[in-house]
Length: 521
Image 1 (cartoon, helix red, strand yellow):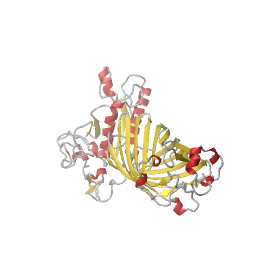
Image 2 (cartoon, one colour):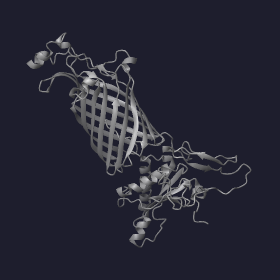
Image 3 (cartoon, one colour):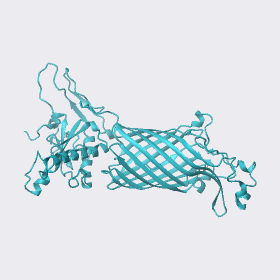
Image 4 (cartoon, one colour):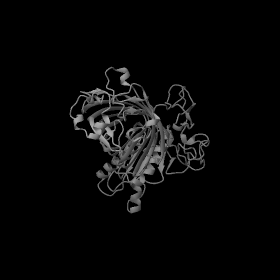
């Protein structure tokens, strides 16, 4: 119901869901005391299936298509006798006595027999600020468009589709601050006024434009791929105005949701809850299960190719052209592209990002864009921080970490305290599209068997790579390596030295010229 947007870089996801609703459509009357008395359960059991397809592009937009289908519907038809007027209370019988027509024809809705299609839905969501699942605050905007099957296909049941298009613009605010993840949604569903087919004297059968509010908060453990928390969705009719905010035209559903990962790409979700306020179509109880898988649109290969939109090396032609590299949030950046060799075969010295004209601190951020031109830092999407010292700095062909990435003892589980460092690495890579590939290198101290340390170091490197991939860094821009205790930077005869050797290094390998020594004069 209430989603947390997830933006990635050129990824594609497929999801299948089952949605069981108990008593989503009932016929009843309201007593003078405000109590609702059920006269007939039109749809008692409903099971819907849905196929969801979504593509996330450039870490800034998600485009989706949802194809729902009614698998099972069970309840009393208008000709049923299980809830005969003879079984109604005297008060209910009196309330409907003056309705024209046969008492058994009060309702015009018949549950579907067999499988029936429902309205396809197109969706779009654009990221405006922040990252919903990694930063404390983010804002996204988009909407849904439902296609009216009743206009396209004859014989479509009236309770499965409108006769006109429905549009719902929405705003999503979301954020993540370990271990809590939250989301707030606001929406306006525009739909022409319609009736469900129930008798107008009973009321509650009219559908119109609705205002929606949703909230969700969950405990989220990203390393274990686990999330648990409640969510609530409120919808109320605001047009036509004479029905606005009335109880029978307002719904409130509360659910408890659980999500967990299976393997590297499979996500499973479960949710169950109740309808506390019920308008047309709101069930007394709902249970949902969903399975989804995400993969990259660009397959990995041994021969690395630059991400889409980046300049590629050219051979045989002497070329040195300033290329404007498009970045999210429309931050202008000028990168000098040089070929591997000129046409006449004459050798030329390689040009590195560290040697770019107008980059005094050699951190790949030109002085014109550098908020701290005399202090090495890392590129940032925020102009006021770009090139300034932080948790990550570009130096000596590496992303130098000002704080180590730490793990639970003898495991590859990243500790929560290192999440800000990983986030800083991801932010720097997003702001540096010319850094086409990095190698994440794991290292250990000399304690324990070498074979065990070698295995632990590569597993830790892969753990970091998975974290960055979840944060939207394209997998083709990363590779992992483990060196165990073979490359110490300190002696292993003290705890301080061993702690220094237990580390993760981020090495820039493409472009190789970026590994220039900025200490030379």
